[in-house]
Length: 117
Image: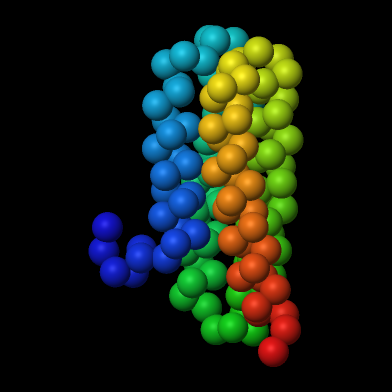
């Protein structure tokens, strides 16, 4: 990746998408174009939000990061729902949830740094 993508939280989101993508072939057909597709789109939107925030001035970052945080929380719910509906097994759920939680902590810290001086 180039220098402009050399942001730890972006790298983590990028890795999340790559991991998510590898699970695609294991997803039941009835879930692939509903909850799975929605989750995949959310990950891409989260990556877009992180990248967008990285280009903004400090005072402009907060709304973008808040919107990205909301999308991450929706992703959390969808990943849990995929586990509960057996679209993914517990092992894949734990792998995804671990990365999503780490991104959440990083995003929360970034958001906090934009609000406080």
